[in-house]
Length: 504
Ligand code: C2O
Ligand code: CU
Picture 1: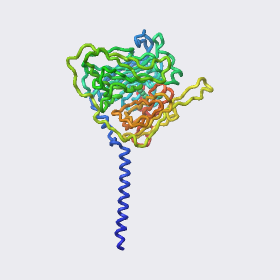
Picture 2 (picture 1 turned 60 degrees about the horizontal axis):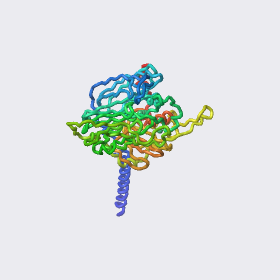
Picture 3 (picture 1 turned 60 degrees about the vertical axis):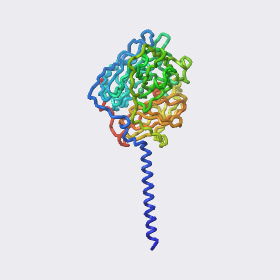
Picture 4 (picture 1 turned 120 degrees about the horizontal axis):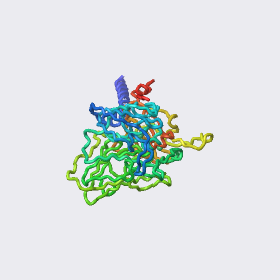
């Protein structure tokens, strides 16, 4: 009998320890699912002020004779008869209303790259809207939730429509933006031009089964090697957008610009937590960077800006290696140098142990020979994700406000700029090595035979594209969808037709 209380005590202790064990397991599992308590993701994005203003724009896609790279006028496809198209400027919090008209000979849609918009406004044909037929219109309407540098382009046959000149810029200003002496918007593109200066007309398999269409003339805002003028000591904001189908860039401002005078302070519209070095950042198709440049004083008269990205797959007829993209000519000196802090992201999570979490979904980017050529002509290659091309794809189901660890692998020996619509993500590792990028982005370059792991917390509901932004690859199938829902259950009958505004 004397043993009874002891037995009882031992039993109670056992139950107690077991309960403690269970609680600690489940709380650590919770913490694992929730690195740095990501449940309030809006916290990282910040608050959107409500300006109460509506900014309205007309956007017309058409075919006309325009000049590219200083050649004689040639046939281009463009928005508002300009290449690049218009720069649409709004304030964070504004309602944006864009009345789009399609005067092209084929259907199109307009996608607002990087913008978090209601799913029905995302411009993806067959997913968020019906294609806008020739002669048709569509009204895009959304609130500008996040400040930054964005762009827009068609999401139909984009390997040809974008390449022929259809792209424009959307800038969302913040009341916290410092006032620079100058602001430059640089849209980078490369054009495959004939010796007559016309856009090379074959958009066929020749380009589609390779590393994509690399042009032979590099332009900024449609000009080859343009010159920009600045005064020594001026503070300049440069918003850079890569609108190329396939070309990657790495800018080098040379020794004239020190790491103090030039920094990158935003990537894909998002402020960085710390300034990044101005030189050497990979700008893949779709990427944007914002630069804060203090024009050096001293004896320097010119700053050449060189592209140092070397395309290993470049064909013989494409120039490779260093290429001057632009020059800044320094003329005079400012009497009123600006001093303000470089804008920075104040609430960047570091997710430093997130790469150790189990992988939720993996995506393998690879190619597959289409044996259809046995009966209908030449061989073609499909660019696939997890062995499936777009159309055969499985939709990844994600719950909103939940942290996901995604992995991308590359088995192709080609570059793939991975782009996710409707959300920003953070790169956690490259080729198995942990990295700490102090910023969110919407596009990341997957290197030759490499891998990337990302962390993402989807917020906005709907079906969002996940695809390769090398436009020839996406044309050949390298696209899939993720669906963000509130519950794990897929909502039934939620077709986008209710939100369609197609007025053909
Ligand atoms: Cu630049 Cu799917 O887009
Ligand atoms: Cu690709």
